[in-house]
Amino acid sequence: MTLPLRVEPAHARHADGLVALLASECSGCFCRWWHFEGDKNAWIGRCALEPERNEAALREALAAGSDDARGVVALADDEVVGWLKLAPAASVPKLYDQKLYRGLPVLDRPSAGVLAVACVVVRADRRRQGVAHALVGGALEAARASGATCVEAFPRRSAEPVHDAELWMGPASAFVAQGFEVAHEFGPYPVLRRAP
Figure 1 (cartoon, helix red, strand yellow):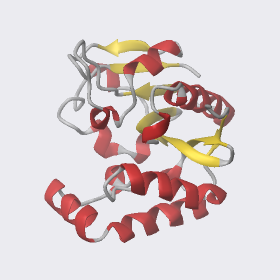
Figure 2 (cartoon, rainbow, N blue to C red):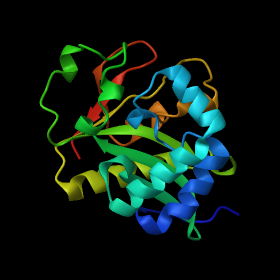
Figure 3 (tube, rainbow, N blue to C red):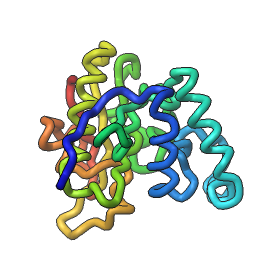
Figure 4 (cartoon, rainbow, N blue to C red):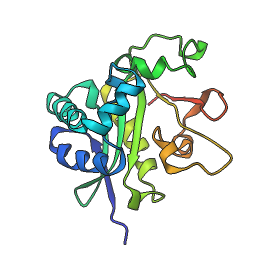
């Protein structure tokens, strides 16, 4: 039996459940990659050897209500089964500075009011049950409530089956189903956009 889902903005009260979800699915990242200042080798070392630092940073950001932990959670019977990071574009410059997106004319716009989907995680036993779709819908509601003008997403899309580990920016189908349109076609990494 699949429990009904409820999606709501992430809050400090969700910290334990969100940490448990991310610990089981994300190899020590705790959704901190976009805020980490070191290089990829330092990041791999931190996730492998000091994941507790990433966990602590996430808990602190949730407690402070900071942009570093802005997003929505999917709850089934009050248990966190999904997470979507919905960050102000200006707070995740590392995302926009990736080689794939750096200098794209479509991203040459003021960042005020723009939110980026910067991570999507669904618990393994709840995948392919509509959780990602619900998270995207909840993110749009949160974006609307915050006065955002635009939500941008950067999913991995392919005609071939994509492994779950490659969908950490969300499945393209979940965004398309919620009315996102292609702002820039870029092989398997399109830029999708929608007004909330």
